[in-house]
Length: 368
Ligand SMILES: Cc1ncc(COP(=O)(O)O)c(C=O)c1O
Image 1 (cartoon, rainbow, N blue to C red):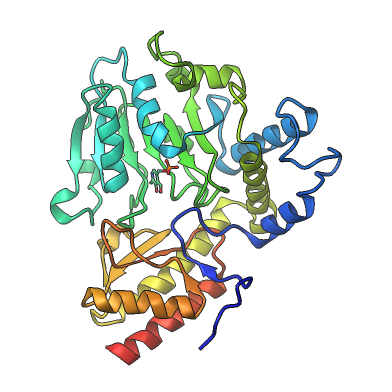
Image 2: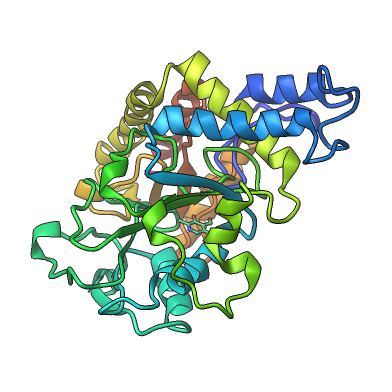
């Protein structure tokens, strides 16, 4: 059995913070002591200086290029994680609308977003997957969304349950999307969205920076007594320098975007790779004759987080422990649902997936 030395890298299937591209880590390592041209580490320089402003502008320009974001939108780089966006979306977009927002709840994170919105307004739940333990996605045509609603809210990928919305919703109200765990994993038709946000620590970089892409006409609605940090307009006016931005996280976000542009060749290419990787894992599950029981319905299985369990908790635990010994780490399901979760974000190499699939087949042969 392979044993890991304490400096040997494993295949890291963590749900986030998650695996980063090796070339990004290597460049960051090479530049850590002295950022070329800056005479100091990126950790040490002023966010107002030319070197950092160039990094900030580059990160935003790369995001615009990758996602095809038009001038109709602002791209903000904020702090507070996606959790803060649960509140900021409602605080900024609900006031003054003819009707409260509509929420589609496909898992734990949508539910948490709803709870925060309830502190600010009276959101309407138009679909809730709770009766089937958040294993399904709604049929969009069955939803009765209110065109007058402040916004319609969705979570494109529920990281804990492994439920991903299979198609983009055509919403009559501005569409707000928590895209934290499938951001930059595929091209997105931005014209369907009013606001899309993602914390970086899955596909886009380390924890500490949250990307908010917001249609400009949706800003300026927050009440005048809104705390300054919580008003999107302040961040847009200050070009994401309303307070000291998370400089190192933004530097890494820029490098990850560069990797996606130059090494991967864009989001259509990474989507193809992600479909291929996910198919490999789901094929093992589907061919296991019930040994591996997937959580999500096939029609909405996540390309990013595959969730499954075995016949009993003991077997799940054994699977996770033996996998770790083989250098396959981070596979424990979220504490609220148990089982196994395979997070296979953009930077998970194909080799990691094939090693995992081989382990899954071996484990089943030994224990099935
Ligand atoms: C879909 C989704 N939304 C929100 C969050 C919360 O993000 P943060 O911890 O950055 O606030 C997560 C974290 O895993 C997530 O997966």
